[in-house]
Amino acid sequence: MEEIELKAAASAMGKRGGAARAAVLSTEERAEIARKGGRKRAQTLSPEQRKEIARKAVQARWAKKSAEKPDDLSESEPAKKEAHAG
Image (cartoon, rainbow, N blue to C red; front, side, top):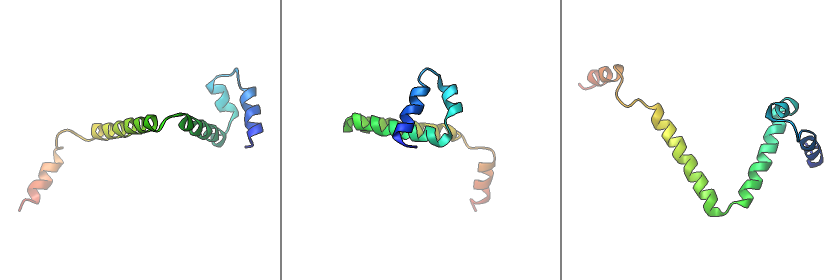
């Protein structure tokens, strides 16, 4: 999608909300708009701000992974350990 087309599409949708925009744009077009917005935002942030955002993202991913792991062993795991203790 050319930038002129992109601007025209954005201008035409200016007063409509997210659901209306989603109905008009394809997945690829929405992804392209999001990519451009992300790049522009990254250009305006300082290196320290980008580093802080990345650090928080990593912490969120690790917190999610640790929340998915069971805190205690399931009943099948002790049986496996006993079978292989020999």
